[in-house]
Structure formats: structure tokens, C-alpha cells
Image (cartoon, rainbow, N blue to C red):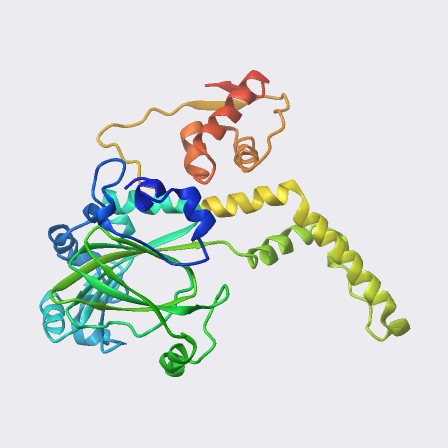
Length: 382
């Protein structure tokens, strides 16, 4: 699956954004047909490929491969062995110990699998591009009658793809309002979720090829049916308003009025301080409304998007070199302006290096900017 269209098929992205995104869950059964490209969604991975990934034991640590039993994480010391590599000593899961725990009813969570195969990577990139957000993917293996996690909600958008076996998801009627954290201590979390989840709303039986979308904050839990179940859950986390504080701080501090001392609150009944704060607030509003600030947000979004690797060995790509002249370059707008500022700070550069330094700027925009600088005489080929 290389696009949101294929993941949601036969629901169109426009309909999804209008009717479901952030609003309510969506279950897309596999019997609605394969993707437009013809591949079943269950082909995202399978038992053979998943076993092969787990067998690459040097790639797994106690942080990326976890076991859950009775709703609680199994301590890493119980299923890992201490080993040494070039960076020092660390805990790595022992396949034999992991299998023992699985036999006793534990579930397995393989974190950050979105970079491990082309199919997993392609869908991660497609989701990142569609929602301008950070994307991760975890694979969940569980067995009949086992509930690895109690009722909870997630702090991100959820797209779950069932690839092997079946799993029953129970969705509740409540949705937390744009949560960025949880309102209860860790030891009180299960009781708090149960108290705030509301009544059961619907049961969803996930079969191979089914897709389930859950908005951020939607209460749910899941239970595997008889046999073994394997599903991959993609988390999508776009930016939210909090990012403005850090970006505005950097921009505001370039203005000396934001570096000036604030007036004492007790001076003249507080009127000088109130006027100063109002003036600073107006400046902040102007900064946030400036087109360059929107460009800064766009660049920050682009940095979040997972990009598939582009190795093409043993072929070595030729480098195309440029050197600046004494002529002024044309004006550049948008994220590419940052890239070109870097380019013109170098005595010479390769356009391939420019693209690598700024992967969050579209290749087409970089190429067009360099071509414009060439026509203006600000750059020459070397």
C-alpha cells in the first residue's frame, strides 16, 4: 500500500477527512475488495516475514521488543539476556525465553517496525505525507482469549491493519477531547480508564485485510479470538498548537522589545505593565500571521515525515557541482529559502548534497531554485 487511497479503499480520502478523521471510528472490512492496486491489505506482512524479522536478533532490544501479560509489561530481565556489542553492554531478547512466555499467555509487541520492510515503509511514508505528521508502527502478536492491554485511549491517530488471525476490538462511546496526556497516576490508570470510558458502543471483529481507524482519544480494548492474531498498528501524530510557543519564542527574541525588562506590576497601578503586555501580544499575533511563520510550520511538519531510504548500490551517483558568483540570487519563498540560504553560504556545493542536507524540502523545489539562481547568474556550474 503506497497511499492513503489504498489503505482506505473503498472509502475515499475526501470522505474520510470529512466524516471520520478526528470524529469517529471507521472499520473497513476486507470483503470490500482489494486495494485499487490489486494487492490485499493483509499483504502488509505475514507469519513468515514476521518470524524472519524476529529472527534478526541483533536488531532487537528490550525497548523495541516487549512482552505483556495480564495487562502488565514483563520485566526485561525475565526474557532478555545481557550481551555486549561495540557500544557496550545491553539487554537483548532471548528467542527461547520469549517463546516460553508466549506459551504461558503473554503477548508480544514489536515496536518501530515501520522501517523494516518496503511495504511497511511505504505505508508509513504515505500516512506521514497525508497527515503531515510523525508516523510509527508496532506489530502485536497475541493468542486466543488474551487481552494484552486494558481499556485505554491513545494520544495519536490509530490505523490498525489485521494481517493474520482474528481479533475482537471493543469500542466505547467516549472520546477524550484532544488529549496530550493522561489525568491519573500510572497506578490508578486502569481504574480511571474504566470509570471514564462510557458504555460499550460497538464490537469490531478484525479479520485479515481489515482496517480499523480510531481517532485520538477514543476508548477501546481488544481480545484475540481462538488461534493466533497478528496486526500492525500505525500511529500518526501531527503537530498541534503547542509548537507555536517554541517557534514564536525564537522569532520573537529577535525583536528587542521582547528582550526588554517588564515594567513592575505595582508601578502606576499596573497600567505600564498592562500596556507593555498588550503591545507584545499584538507583536506575537503579527508574527503568527506572517507568511514566513507559516513556512516555518511547513518545514517543521516536513521534518516529521518518514522517508523511504534511497540506496542504489553498487551504483555511485555522480555529483553536480555549483559555485556562487558575485551576483545577487533571486528571492526565494517557502522552505526552499532556508535550503538556498545554506547553499549560498558555501563556496561551492553539490546539488545532491543540498537535497541531502534539507530532505524536508521537496526535490522539485530545490531543483527549481537552483535553476532560477543559474539563470540569474548567481550560480555557475563547476
